[in-house]
Picture 1 (tube, rainbow, N blue to C red):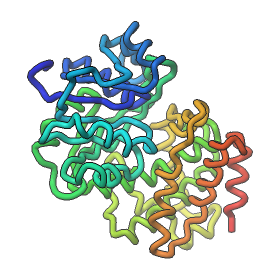
Picture 2 (picture 1 turned 30 degrees about the vertical axis):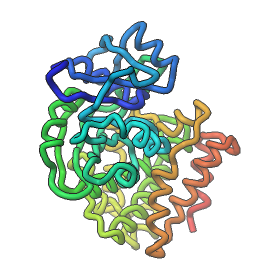
Picture 3 (picture 1 turned 60 degrees about the horizontal axis):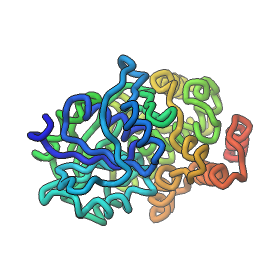
Picture 4 (picture 1 turned 90 degrees about the horizontal axis):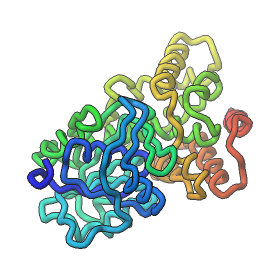
Length: 351
């Protein structure tokens, strides 16, 4: 495909970006990848992209640059795989290297497409909602922690030829579907991550062990319930996560919010959360990894988005507010992750 297919730039090669870049190299796509981490670039350039986890462990030859090579571009697709706080700056910096009919592709969790669109224009942004997990264990070693693919869409309108061309490229990573309701998919994923990723950050563990504890599952259900209320107020039509998880059904009713145990429907919701935990049991929060590396966690792009959109509607979101406070405290070093902190969250949000 090199030389004849679309030219692709991957910006950011952490867990997600590194895995995407590796698979694109593997299928011979015309891909350039850049990172600000010199150690990661050195590891890839000396030993290749080393993959493990989902699929056979293997090493994929390919280059990784710390700056855009001279004469590279223009690019048909610029895949933004940075952390959410850096996505707007990354888009602005890369905009000059986008082909006249090119598009940015946002992989981030949260609601990053409108932020990028404000900088480069709505018609030039594609959302790629990620339904799989990945992390970088050490420089150049990428671990696929959960299987899955992508849902592609635009901020407005039906998927066009720009998505039809991108689709087979991303299918090198996993199954790809298209949607005409990108915001509905994004909000569902936002709600999911605001529970799973944030609680994993506070608890300091992978998802599997945490969801075995009933009170932690309850916290996730409450986070999701607040998020669904805000999405509904925003007139967002929520889509099922991975085609199966219906957050409108998962959201607690007023009666269920008063119950600790005893409701068959509540039992079913806990059982569903256990199933989600089983699928993503090896998932480790990217925010927790950011804290461990001395970076600020992107909680304002998860629970913070729910809070921000709740305020104009006068919707109370106390659990999301407390989660944001605790994750910020972890980022500042005022708290330490662990189950005692999750227990504190549970106790302080009972009213």
